[in-house]
Amino acid sequence: MTKSTRNPSELHERREQRLMLLLLAPALLVIIILLVLPLLWLAWQSIWQDGRFTLAHYERFLTDSVYWATFLQTFRIAAIVTLLTVVLGYPVAYVAAGAPQRWSILILTMVLLPFWTSVLVRAYAWLILLQRNGIINSALTGSGLIDTPLRLVNNEFGTVMATIHILLPFMVLPLYATMKKIPGELTMAGASLGGSPMHVFLRVFLPLSLPGLIAGMVLVFVLTLGFYITPELLGGGRTYMVSMLVSRNIEVYNEWGAASSISVVLMICVFLVFRLASLLIPFERIMGTR
Image (cartoon, rainbow, N blue to C red; front, side, top):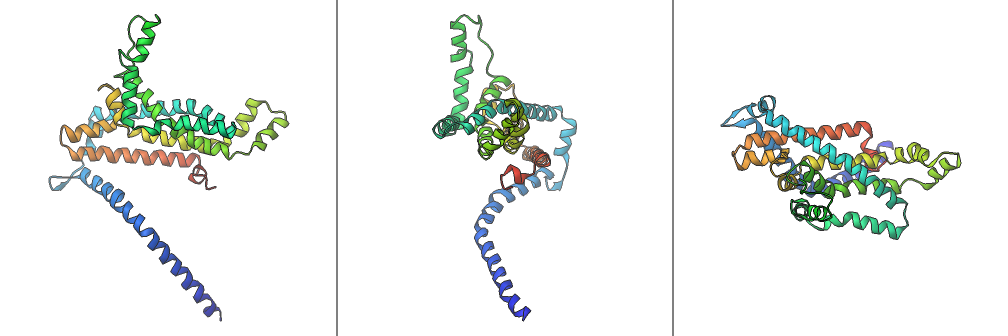
């Protein structure tokens, strides 16, 4: 009797599993073709050259100072951009989450405006603003605040400024989504118990907003690591990032193996960043599923 009643449920469960696999098959096929296979080819290119196995491309990371300097500069710029987007984005998300709906929509619309134009256009816009005869230098010299134009472009400053402008929405949106889920009664309860606004913010609101904060920081940091157009245009050859190192190895030296090894190392670094973030806060909380 038990066997006869169990078999139909087991058959139904297996039928559902097969149906789910069929529904997932197109998406899995696309992921395998467009993501998994290129990554495998990339890894293979980094260890196979002239018909033999080699680790020469990875040995350069231990011997070539250019590789170390480029990675260090890339991670330093990513850290600076992430920190500044937190400083700029957290107050914006806080105000948007606590404002009435019409003001909240207006604030988010202003934040999302950069998404309406391409990265290339935004990079050229910052180039026009920051160059020697640009709008900012012209305004400063015209007002008499400075005698000679400032060097705002073709250096690390211009790269950081433009990158912050492009990636700021990736900090604000996760923060806003997390802050909107924080019940207002919690802060009211903290205030009713005698806590000052700063004390309630530090002890109640800030800890509850950490999942959105870490999600935004991870997004901004990882995206900055792979930026190419912005440092290429605004760095002026003085700000050298990993993406540019990959491009030079392919375009100038035709070294696909070297470019592949750099990409593999960068990908490993990204995985380590995600792993570190998951140790701080589980991804279930970051994604809002728990």
